[in-house]
Length: 528
Image (cartoon, rainbow, N blue to C red; front, side, top):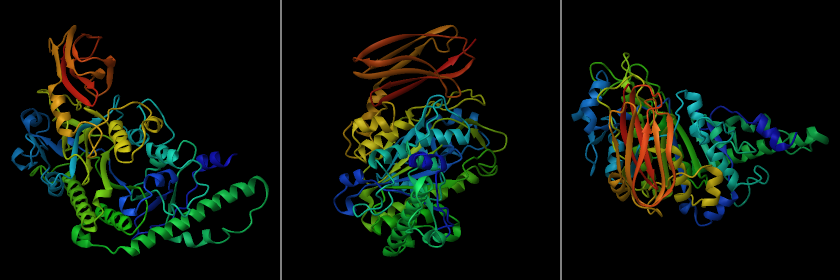
């Protein structure tokens, strides 16, 4: 068995109990090509912090579509937050945040947060495990990739890893996971890019690491395991040294008695960045978003499980952003918040919501395009238990935009990491594409109408576009892609497409029009 195949099959890890105040920590290796991008001082190195909301966050209870409240009240009367409780956002009409999210409201009003509306993918999967794999691997829902999108990124930057690392150019891990166990994210095409570390690495693994291995096959594999153990020991020491170099500033974070473990994790992230660690990717997690029951309290819909989770999230992110700003490093840090799926439009009888499709994502930092990208999701007047939100943006468009705009990944390499051609979205400022305000304005100007609507046997879709790649898709009430009518480069102009009812079940369907970086959706009611 070759060394890479051995690693791929066994994914060797040194599992150790908590390097930082009993918080599990995973360290991932570093990349020489990334160093070529960031050979200047550490303060200029760019960092991505990924925050995973495990369980499926209810986007309609997080980013509130105030102009849809009449229909939303019909769909989720037993959990809907009162309209006057929504937190207003500067410069944005008809969109608010959950009242527990005051910290994130402040970041938005400071121009340090972008909300990306209705992010999802065609053919959504409602299993936590499969949906998480799809988001981590950036695959299609019917495609089973054995590598993660960050693993492929690391592989493109670190060919030949783990041989030769750590080294004098990059002595630190490239990515660190604290409190989130999603190893697929960092799995490369041919090798697992990471290892799990903790405090007792210095016990049995330290013994015999430099002893001469036996000859033959067994010696080769033993040498490889010892290489991983030696790297783990080195990375653990580097992380501890970075923490020691930068003491905690607790003034920005909630009191530890509140039980906000996400804030504790982000506090350590800030310390290691400022402490001199050259790590480029951090992953943290907040668990508990599978709110099938008791999402809201019956007596007060602004309280309950989801409100508590959003309180933890908002306080942790606000504390983290204020902390890195005070440290003078916020221009280097981009934070991305995501979940494996959203929730259904309609609430259930247990004061909760069931697995759904599209949901908002959040991007934070001092170098981002602040604002709301996209429009409020449209809520039909009559909603069934199966109805989902229409997708506006594919999550892989967000990934591709971050890789190209934040980490400067060239187009030819990007195509090997995110394996299809996705829209570039205005995320980083300055970006080499149209800004968020203009994208929203141009998307609003896109013309997409359907008549007759409701549709029985057939209808026509008329749309007007700019010059560029154009795609027109039909989605069913569950958010699954049913049909692609257009997928090609088209010159600017007006177009008309015939839509046939191909034995579609009655319900709320929607068309999605993609035109370059722009998108538009339109609801269609299908009747018998």
